[in-house]
Image (cartoon, rainbow, N blue to C red; front, side):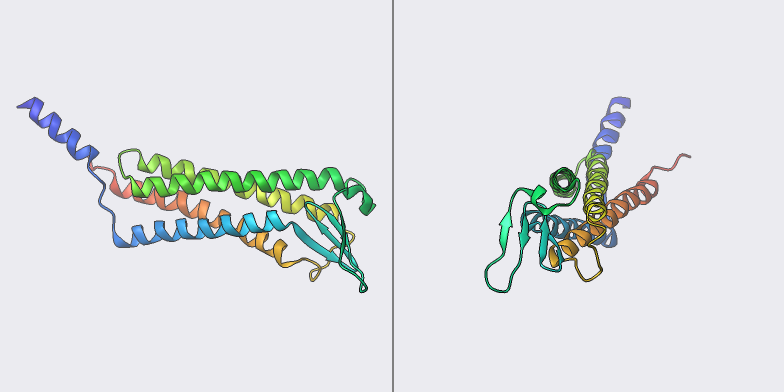
Length: 197
């Protein structure tokens, strides 16, 4: 009789947890916004043109000089921009942005797997995925901040390009999704804990 009770309890413990519509909707929304952040950040890093100051276009991959008579003249050697430390600093910003995209992709994958293949480890996968999004936010915001600090003498509010604002938006979304993911996991775990009599 005891063996049957233990087996029944194991089966109940491994059963798919019941989730409310609201919780499922929030988790789906977090996954969708994370996917949007990954796309925005990927496009922004690949394009890389983040700052247009007068007739100079500064980017993660190259430096361009713009004239009215011809197409932009671009150089991959960032030292030609005559900004101290630009080549090294932009290299670090580029690496941080790229690693942020990689971390966000792995985080998104864990979030999706935790929802598609629900089991007793789903909450742990969701938590790890949320932590990866937080790491991605730290890397992304670090890359943005270092780029702005390097070119602080040329920065104005209107000099940032659309690609810079895409990366800024992606970084903000990664932060919101990471915090929201950790929060919803903590409140639902507290709610679903078995009561002791």
